Amino acid sequence: MPGRLYLTRPVAELADIAGVDVPDAEPPRRNIKPGQEVLALIETGFCKMRWGMIPTGRRNARGRPVMETIVNARSETVFEKSAFENMRRAVVPVDGWYEWTGQSRRKTAWDIRSAEGAPLWFASIYDVWSTPGGIEVPQIATLTCPPNADLRNIHDRMGVILEPKDLGLWLTGDATAARALFRPWPDGRLTISEAKDVDWAEP
Image 1 (tube, rainbow, N blue to C red):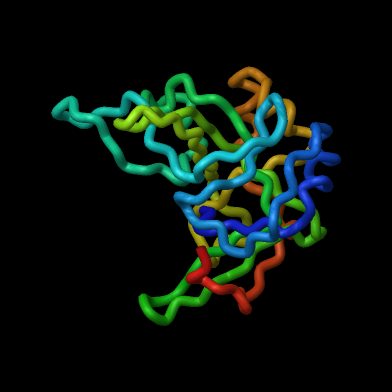
Image 2: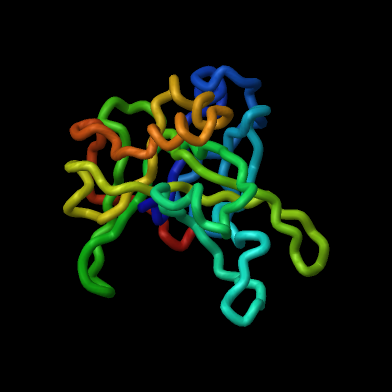
């Protein structure tokens, strides 16, 4: 499942594909971490959200609020879990993402991207969290599904990737139609290489 993201292409290209207004220019970002802002597409166009969601109203067995941040949510249960009630839908566009394999301190980072050189569109959910101090924070989590053959040896989950023609269906379609999109990306449409020249410490 996506652990780090990157987006380096001009946002005007993304807006053209999505058929929405061009957002403010974004600098190229090679290492987007959980907790940082990501560019997100919602029904009204592009906006910024924090990647990582604290589900509103989620409580533990003692009735206390659960503050655990969810970066990725399983698509198989997203429509059933009470933690995700009233969530809205969004899409996170990326050029690719990173996963790691190997033992601690000797891990290999893998760069995963479209074999066609196209942007990838992650199905996501979002809401607005009101912090204890009263600040409202738009927050988002990407959805995951089982991996395709390209990724199976790297990770046991992958992001739910949408075809450009299905962006509107995910954002505004009913639950039955949306569920049909929860499937692994077709085999052979991703390319995986060892990630190099990435500053993992960058902000």
